Image (tube, rainbow, N blue to C red; front, top):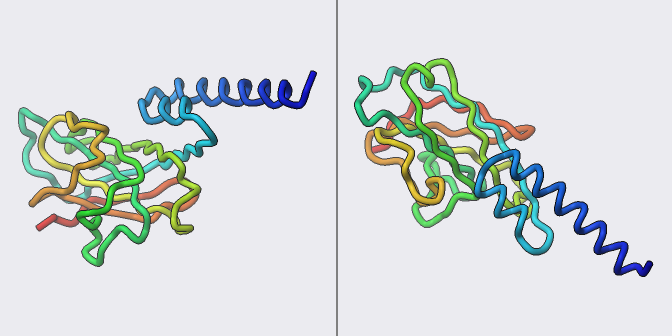
Length: 168
């Protein structure tokens, strides 16, 4: 057995374990990371999002919660991401005002997190009316006027975010 044979077996074994863990996450981002060529880093951040401020009355269309991860240099003084900066990762899901009052946990998967700016990522979250129907897990979404939002730096793979600011 040559060194190339040994390396090939290790690569296949490590790739199959990555694919198995990605399938368990049931996310297209995780599957993309698992099947990408080359060394890919995948980092999961758990965002605990709550809104103590009451939201407007429930609507027939419901609410969507959008959670995005940004480099710390991508967020301005108003604590919103710069318009021309793209999130490192994003997720969206349907929520109710009652769920937000108790807190909602959202996992955000980030590809190549280790290649960032060396600082802990910032998690930005907001809630707006509508169903979670945005393309690409809301990677191009930005808080609209009147959206209730919040942000926090990650620490140890998690962030606690309270939605209490209104976008102008």
